[in-house]
Length: 263
Length: 263
Image (tube, rainbow over all chains, first blue to last red):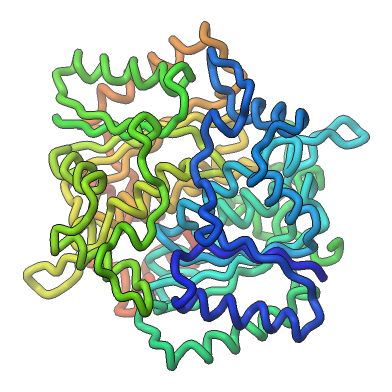
């Protein structure tokens, strides 16, 4: 398989840097091809602004539609086009980052904001005139894995932990970025208590990561719902018989059929 | 009251810019003081890196502890210190941003990453030797309001909407940033269908915002749980009698007592 590994940590000597090195060598051993976007190393521009959409209406910046216009007109900047080309090439995206304030660092959030533009990652009409999203879309057929380090202990991120279950804390990425654009979200891989780990502890974390990478092609994705699978009504609300009595992000998963069969 | 308004949109001519102008004049009418951090206008540096923590260990960058060291040693850069001073001054933080990829734009995520450092916003021991978080902490006693614009329709962000309930999609900010640092999170204010709104539609959105700002001092915060309120065991897991049978982010709220009585 072809794997794009997006790395968003400022220090290659960190636990994350060590895991990146181990991860890439594991991919080599498994016979996968890979490319790396080391966002800090390339000085990736994090902030989406008017410079990203040359020729935008000076009266009012409608970001989404201006991004699509610039994309279709070939006017996006080279750094964005380079990332899009790597995404198009890849079968699997790995996003590796330390969990800062319960989400990706700004440099990776900016990669979402700037690279995953309308017309490329989503917002394309299918043959029936529908706009495919959630399980379908510009990046359909790919898989996506989060590899993250967490300062806190694991128990606090369990189903009833104080920080919220990790799968739900990461819902904006897993469901809102991966699944929205059609990618199958694999269960996130996390190393907990990361700040307390010393270099001598890294090999155990690396072994766990290697194990997860071995199952990249086969692991069952998180079961989310297809937008056009019949579960939602025309207002994009779950029909009454679906996950009855449930609400919030949990309702988007309970009883959903894994995408594993399709991808 | 003293209000710090953090604005994270690239264009002052946008719907968001219009709401900012209206919001500030409403605060004036109500007799509140305010300061603004217009992150795009000041060119706020979004990306936390080693430059933010001068004198860090070159062997391995442990971000959290190096930030605390730099904070205590007075070595943080002027732009970070300026934001911290405004936060310390304020009774209420308003965070205004367009919802991009189900979260704040990178420039605002970077404001969290760089400004809310350990030792300032959290990680201070209280008299009992406990580290206060979740309802208590460096920013305890303040209130915080999200003002956001959303491209999609409202129904999709309702309790059973496809995108997830807005309160839960924003859980990483509401619970993970505001509540974690001790701030009382007010229910978010959202303008839906934002990209389809024309300038002629702005006044209605502005009136809704004005109404929300009138209740800034009195509105009941979202009811989350205090870390040291007895609901969690020593592993930071909900005790069995608390929200029985519930899990995930919903369990952090169900049956929790609003912080309104305390703040």
